[in-house]
Amino acid sequence: MTVSSPASLDALTREGETDRTSRLGRLIVFTGPSGVGKGTLLRSLRHRYPALKLSVSATTRSPRPGEVDGRDYFFVSRDEFEHMIERGDLLEWAEFAGNCYGTPKAAVAKDIEAGQWIILEIELEGARQVRETFPGALQLFVLPPSIEELENRIRLRGTDADEAIERRLQRALVEIAAASEFDQQIVNDDLEVALQQLEDAIFSD
Ligand code: ADP
Ligand code: 5GP
Image (cartoon, rainbow, N blue to C red):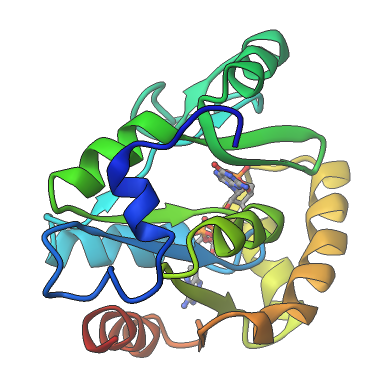
């Protein structure tokens, strides 16, 4: 990292300090191919547990219909994103399907300090960066029941152009091949079953 981390983030880098006896919050990384249902699962989970916080990422991608700046993402230009990298404002960042995505560091540090449990919904490269920096974070990976079903879900969601769908599917194969790097894998076939597995993973860890 180019700037020194807040004390809370430094503590998270030391494995074993993120248990429930710690006054610090904890970091949960949630990864899986685009369209697998991460957003859907997290919306349901947060409905049940409003105290769980979701980190709001910065992205150079354009907003989808219904997405709100500052709630779903901070939508920024490529220049602004590069400045964030240069200033060391990002905990991790990666390029995905032609756009940049990154986690603002300051907000996560503040939440951890305040004892919050915070979820980072990020792609594989970002998850790998977090694993290096914060080995105490819980890393979860969501799998689709099949590639065909994944493609169906991306198409049914109707938010991506054909070219973007193709890029997302290619990337999905790479991500799925790395699923075993994660602490736990959850197959999102039946939504309720997956949600229960997610709850168990988070609260029994
Ligand atoms: P992600 O956030 O991983 O990109 P989304 O949450 O946007 O994925 O889900 C992609 C699409 O799949 C959405 O249309 C959503 O309603 C649908 N979906 C999510 N989970 C399931 C499931 N278990 N069964 C069927 N469809 C699902
Ligand atoms: P989408 O464009 O579908 O919202 O997101 C595309 C991918 O970027 C998803 O896999 C999502 O998890 C990931 N992503 C979202 N925010 C971040 C972030 O801050 N960092 C990284 N590395 N990936 C992110």
